[in-house]
Image (cartoon, rainbow, N blue to C red):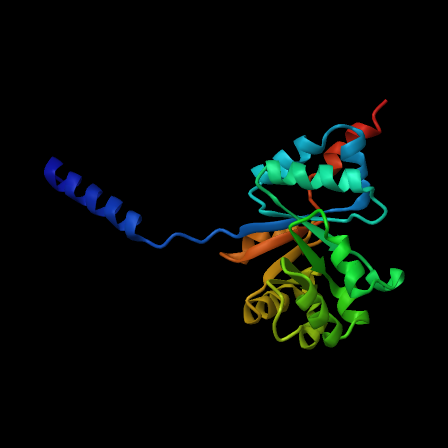
Length: 222
């Protein structure tokens, strides 16, 4: 093959590769920090380090378990999230155990930029209760459900929905449900996070933040 023909063939191949569709990468959306994680990061002065790493992994939202956490610490954690361009959202865990009313639910989110109600909420509260909350709370509401709760999901009022796809055997069907609901796919750091490459261009959450154990390992070292 002449040099000129070789160059033309190479250029044509390069142009084809440039025009070929690229496989879409799954997009990180949010991750959760439990109460023990929050207490650890605050007490060990690693809070900013944790938020920086969460941001580096391209998450946008951090769901925060603030049960029995002081106002001062709630403000500190929320501000640390904002400083790293993360949206702090209170994760309202098991509200039925505390018999939380709508005003109390709103109060739970006093230091954050949104609130999340999850499968525990939808199991124990009615859609009427949800719409009372929606009227009372003017910021973002995140709704997290298990797949069997699809029919319990309100017809409106959730700014974002995620479906908890925590079991590898049901992941494919769970993703189909998330697609139908235009929802985020929530993975489990322990069970399904390693399958994130199958998500294609879908958005995903991770429960819990999958790298926090680094800090716990450090904490127990002599």
